[in-house]
Length: 314
Image 1 (cartoon, rainbow, N blue to C red):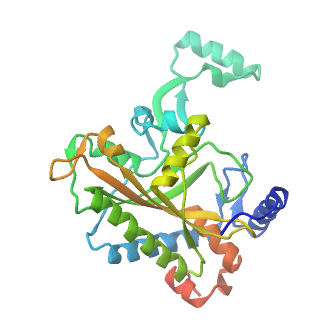
Image 2 (cartoon, rainbow, N blue to C red):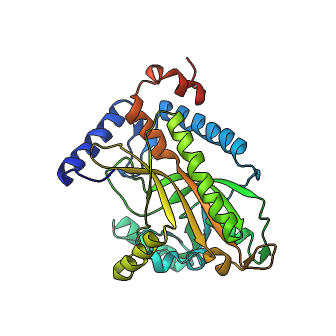
């Protein structure tokens, strides 16, 4: 599947889809177009989807699944260890707060009352918004020998600063991931198995998907080289579907990290070598909206097989 559509037509499709989602109560508008809420119907789909993915993956991953959970905020130092600062500075988000004394507070109020830029009076807290659900996992396991039989299941809110009117690209979104650490063979096998599991999940929900080699949005001229290297190594695959006519949208992925996180967080495999890692990711909000695009906004009219899988009441 390749992009064959004029950009202006694609923009119109995105605007129309957004208007339809708002008109049918699927998206709840807020001050930012990239930060909408979800209405009752998509919340029901999301809950059913979470349970369905959990049920299928726990059946299919023969090594077993270990659920863990982390906050959507972590130490800003993590942005260095994961190489996010060097690779994706355009996406990251750090947290500032008021750290001053009474004199600073009075100045803040003066600026606030004058309707000037009071945010300039805030200072870094050393915290950042989580960019990928799996990143805190590596910090928890830091300086350890990993359990190479464990597949970690994580769901978390993620932040990436790429505001857009496209309802398939929120600034904050929920990601479900399945991570395995171990030898190169184990990590690559996890990626391969995950692609098969994900494809089966999507197709059982009536979504037509393709698996394509992909790359991350590395920043700058050097990022072009990194992206080309990632494509050449086939380190990242995406599961894409046609949400907008003539183009493709990723709703899931499977990635092999080599020893990147093993090196940065000093993680060892049981044989003493540096741990390799791989993850499978589901873009939960995107999947929910892709299902609306495929089956419509009336849950009662969805195919019975899909309604049953997601436990949507009659």
